[in-house]
Picture 1 (spheres, rainbow, N blue to C red):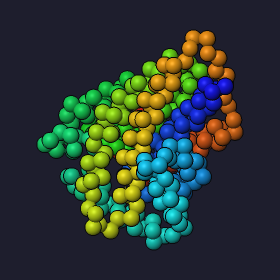
Picture 2: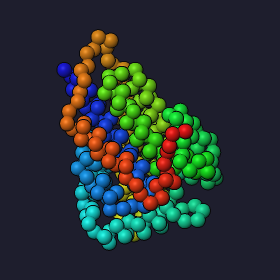
Picture 3: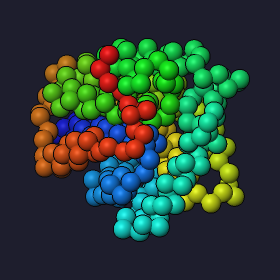
Length: 269
């Protein structure tokens, strides 16, 4: 019974992480809209955050922050649009770059070994950037899109109780998260101007950094759980309305279109 309950929890977390990675892909990939804020403050999003929230890991604060957003406040949306332009848009280097190489290359190189390693991971899943090789593959939004799609596949094999396949996917995802997001997002958060006037993106970037750390822990625990499964362990299929609701919410989120999002999208190679 304990292993069956653990499996239900594992599936719930796997479903939640697919949603949250897709949300962060949209948040940092395109210009904010009312529809984006509605997704970010939805019951499905708050449920996904609750799955990962633990004392001290920063995600309870994210839920409180999102609950405080009034999606009908047009002034708030206008401020968010101006933040987006100030932080992420401009000629040359934006004031808050969101690609890995800006923090790890040591010389502001856009395309280096890390970028090519990320590109190779995309290709291993049959994906490439929509805009082609001129786009830095190691942008946070692109990597979140990659992990969102990968997490959805991992959830699928877990649902099929194909644990060897799940273990393989989890190992690859953990390596990617650790090497390409946990390695630099805290630096990006620390580089933000504490005296700035931004209201939306600093807490969201801080939450993204917290989430990838929490996800790395989850992936390690998931791998350990699968490793402890005995050959004669019987795990029954686990389906419920909550899983179905999250799946529907994810599909709706995936269809969300934002201005400039095509710059940070993955397509089949």
